Length: 79
Image 1: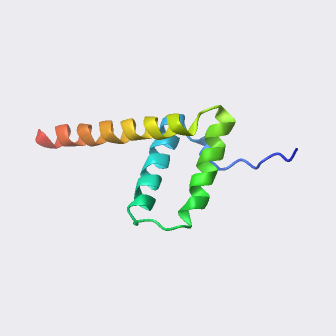
Image 2: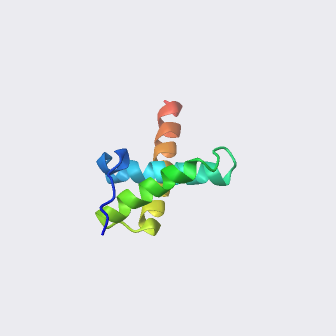
């Protein structure tokens, strides 16, 4: 069995990894980022799987983190 090389994503906290994963996927779907970013997505997925994190969890956690961040910014800007 070949051991996979680690990447920067292996060093990120799970929440940050999830947020990046969600945002990059969303931008690819919206046409903002291009196919080259699929390589980055694969690296993130490999890092998550090495941690035992499912891709569904990674996506859901990322969407909640991004949504909470947006709400916090909106609340902060009101004051």
